[in-house]
Amino acid sequence: MITIKYFGMLAEHTKCNEEQYDSKAITLAELLEDLNVKYQFTPESFNVALNQKLIQDSEDITLQFQDEIALLPPFAGG
Image (cartoon, rainbow, N blue to C red; front, top):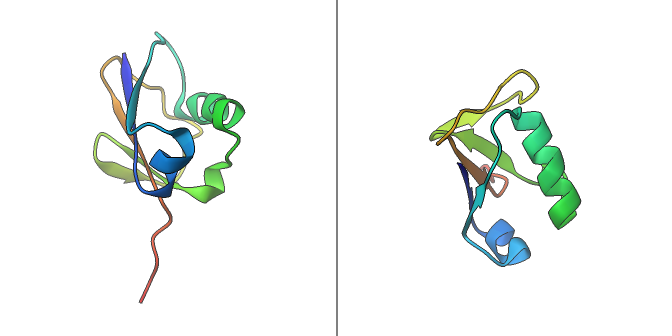
């Protein structure tokens, strides 16, 4: 199973901090599209970390069993 963690306003929007996604072969882009359909948010509204490393481009990443995805609110500079 793939673990998806939500932080900040994303946890409030989804009404959960974490959920499990049961899929054997899926890309990160496909997962994000599934989450967009489920929760009605767009990828531009959050940053994505895969196994605790920020990801810039999700197109070519195939997720593995036990990967951890974290959806983080946009970072503010200052």
